[in-house]
Image (cartoon, rainbow, N blue to C red; front, side, top):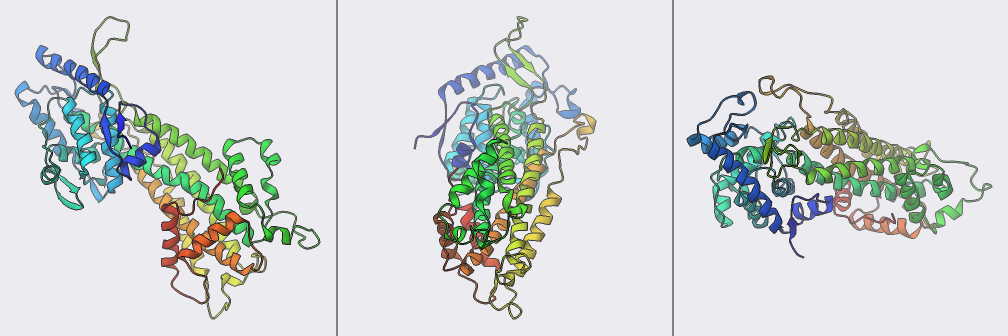
Amino acid sequence: MAPLSLNGQPLSLSEIESVAAERHSVALAGEAIARVDKSRQVIKSILETGQTVYGVNTGFGKLADVRIPADRLAQLQTNLVRSHACGLGEPLSEAESRAMLLLRANVLAKGHSGVRAELVRLLVAMLNAGVHPIIPAKGSVGASGDLAPLAHLALVVIGEGEAICDGIRQSGAQALAVAGLAPLQLAAKEGLALLNGTQAMTGVGALTVVRATRLAQIADLAGAMSLEALMGTPVAFDPRIHQVRPHAGQMASAANLTAILEDSQIRESHRSHSVDPRVQDAYCLRCMPQVHGAVRGVLAHVTQILETESGSATDNPLVFPEDKSGRGTGAEVLSGGNFHGAPLSYAFDYAAIALTDLASISERRIDRLINPDINEGLPAFLCADAGLSSGYMIAHVTAAALLNECKVLAHPSSTDSVPTSGGKEDHVSMGMTGALKLRQIVENLEHILAIEMMCAAQGLDYRRPLQPGPAVARAHARIRAVVPHLDEDRVPAPDIEAIATAIRGGELQITSA
């Protein structure tokens, strides 16, 4: 495949994933290089004429009023990177580090940051050579962007910090040398251009939303398996119901559920009212299109925000080589607030709430599968020798524990702000906190859906010789390929993890919409 050409354009989440997780190569577009050079000329002109411009020849934040002599500007940028590398906690994953490199290179390629082209080229080269900065996850308040995480990325650019290259954690200087690359001495404005942006929260959020979008479809499949195991009815998915409430996600989920449930022997066995007097199913089965579909809608909205952000100039100040103000002022360097992560922070909180509710409806289906009072004749806790065996009793307890954590994490981080930098940066987004919370919710949801599918597969075993529809049967077979039928009690944790791994790997993507 041809390298992904970076031109400062919005990137799709699939493009971000292909570079971050699958190591698709990238290249810097020729027109981007021309724009970057033009932007850099503006900074050079400022330095030559002795103008005072924030971040070019001044201190930062509360120290913006301090003028820095020309002979100390390079040291200013290096000091900025070192002082801001204050991240703590577990490092971001290799894919998340790659996503940050990709996104930072792309937004610098827009030509509004005033950096040299060789800086952007180095970021691209690090991506292609597999030099992955070690970036601690914690320390960003989401304005002035993701300062601490991006500072750890920038440390490797200058030959400091740590990185992984060829699977070995080593110093930034060693990693660059192994890849045949040389560190840069940062010039005026470049340290600030590397640090001032939203690429940590965007990178973590983008990869998380890719996983979440897959789970929104997996939820349909898990729910369909549960409905079959509980001998429910697909009547609630009739397109006429959803055409009169035409939310796109709801209609897509209903169509997907209908297709997955086609040609089911189990359904035909109890279609007659004389055989099955039930009129309608519980909400966790009947309302799947409304809930699952609404989650699809939320994720579509969040995806649009992330993709817009991926091609947005988010540092400060921004360089505008061509005057478009109408005032005839020529090139300008303007201070603003594009580094503020509010659009992303709100989106992450929105997604967290929706995905927590998706976990909640799945947990209700798990309970319905194992509870002998409401599971339509299935064995108690889905085990043949209940009493001597506990079956999947505690698997449901684990799902409840994970759901509780999701509910705690769904509390919005965007509603909090702690003033920083001596009150100069007095309102922040907490967007990185939102991205990290969302990532944990998605991981929990993967396991909750794995527990549901494990229980539903066991329930389907007890419906034999009746067979589910072909799509459900295929999903059942794939689960049985990694997790055998539960004949007697065994440790369930490896089984849950095996199904969650299959979900993450796309092995259970059986959908029609």
